[in-house]
Length: 133
Image (cartoon, rainbow, N blue to C red):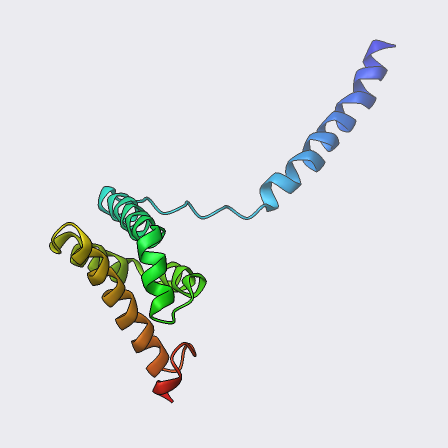
């Protein structure tokens, strides 16, 4: 009796193992994710810190008042800063660090934002200043 049972059970177990292993054998091997170098990770961290520093300066009340006095919508400035590449953010942050502390840094930051807005307006990417058309 046990011999007959084994004789029937063995091919069923073999068939079950084959059927269960086919999906595993047919699965496409996933490409390994690329390694992130230390320099790339540090650059991304620095870009995030630079972007945060620019946003902190632009969020100040005196800067907001100056933007409105120049006729620039602060929401447009925030969107523009978010659209900057990491290299542009780094250049802008370096320029902010070179300026002296105090009120002149606000004027310099406003000037940098104005130049960025002007260039993108001349290129036709935005419509902030009517005199560029």
